[in-house]
View 1 (tube, helix red, strand yellow):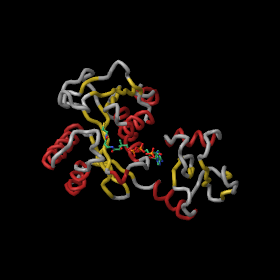
View 2: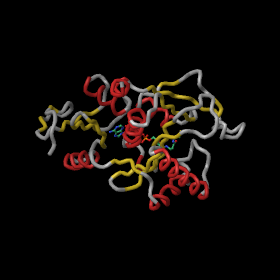
View 3: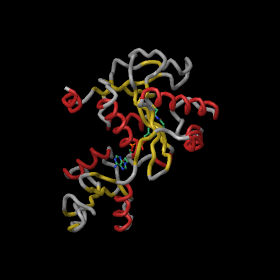
Length: 254
Ligand SMILES: CC(C)(COP(=O)(O)OP(=O)(O)OC[C@H]1O[C@@H](n2cnc3c(N)ncnc32)[C@H](O)[C@@H]1OP(=O)(O)O)[C@@H](O)C(=O)NCCC(=O)NCCS
């Protein structure tokens, strides 16, 4: 059953009996819209419906029928899990790594690179008990998100980084944000991390937006040349973001 707050639709002024209300983000002036935008990471240019359910905002296309939107709130609230990867994930993993859009800011990977990476990530997970998880959404392999300890020297080593890579069809739905949030929480609460870092090329704005939404802060002194990217390559320069263990986990462990 739907439960939670009852409200009036900001935009249509309908009283919504089922505890869902709709807003339209035509302007960031309204506090409701500002809150939704902040949580969703959307900007003032968003022309999408925002549905809030139990204070969780979700964005939908403007003309979607009401029933569809409600059923999608239910669906979207459903199953995102992080789990150890399985053999059956491999084909989709390799397909993701051969998608030029997914790999736009990464070095290209051959199928045999994917074989190596898949088994390395799996071994790390088995050895440590944490690492880079497969993200499963409604039973489908959506990509890989998790924590990784680089095995090559970086100017800020030793460090634990958060990694994310999703299949294109899973972008733009807040899935990376939710999955990475779970991984980061795990890192601070169960895997003993005091700090988690994240880095990417300055051009990878999608990834940078995600870092910022997750509360990472740029270390302006931390820009570096990635040692795995060949000298002179346009993806060699990286920006560094850091997130410290939040107080809630410090208090919980103290
Ligand atoms: C980086 C990457 C994981 C980001 O994925 P993403 O889907 O943009 O990230 P999020 O999960 O934060 O989703 C944000 C989008 O979902 C929308 N969204 C919908 N519902 C949402 C919700 N409930 N909560 C938050 N955002 C939501 C946001 O409005 C935003 O949409 P926009 O793309 O139109 O701005 C993805 O682009 C990717 O896999 N890239 C290729 C690999 C890569 O570059 N990895 C990083 C290497 S360092």
